[in-house]
Image (tube, rainbow, N blue to C red; front, side, top):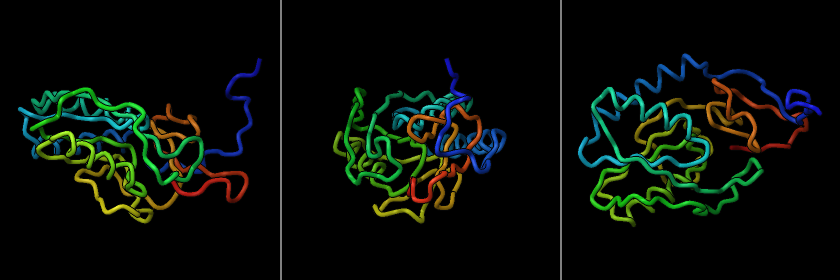
Length: 194
């Protein structure tokens, strides 16, 4: 039986962009920014699955030290499938169950790329009655933006490269990496943007 380390993939890590220490420092700074600008009493954090789960967990743990105790929920929005290009259509695979009417929502996502997913999520929260909606993204890739949106809190800005690690994946691989890295593909044209 072959283990995962023996599986040949048409892609591999090209270079590390942000180390585990880089990420930890930036997450701590983001927690401070959220803590200074968000109201403690009516805060709801909504993680956009699946890529945000590690980032989301680290943010939530950090907020405790800023005396913020938000209600927490998740939504699963799909726009990629197993490919590397956004399909252009965002679908809800799992909706939130927390009532956000009259609350301050902070959406947490792994990467702001075309902006379609985050734009959709913001509009969804407002449609559900949120008083205000802010967004926090680990990575921002402004060169790929097609939707009219920017994030309120940004971890790092990246170039138009395909990134994996710290929850981000390619076809469900690489989420476990403690750092963020650029992925390269053996066959030119095998991957587009993220």
